[in-house]
Image (cartoon, rainbow, N blue to C red; front, side, top):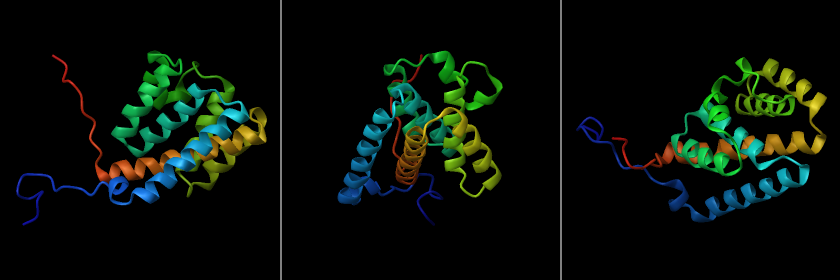
Length: 162
């Protein structure tokens, strides 16, 4: 009988702690991507929207928690964050933001070539080459962090609501 059958969850390996050199390399990549996004002219709030949308798709509670707080600090509103999962059905995102979100989704679903082609064509209309590259790198990087957190089962802790 394994740990989950016995009524308790097995302890996961925190791969970031188990392989700190690899994790430091990933965080260094994230820092380089943050700088590239800033140099490309992407506002921090847009970067956080990309981080959140990818984390929603991947179901990464830990990254959703971290990047929701970061988005709010960057000036995002609770209303826009609340409808982010259904961004296509709203009018609250700009054309640039919509293009970035579509490109982030296409990066997260690399096997869907039709999605990629549509997203890329839309992005070419409203984003510069530097912005396109930055959005793709942001999506690639948060996808990597999502996998680290999901497979490690990084906890989201807090005070329960009363």
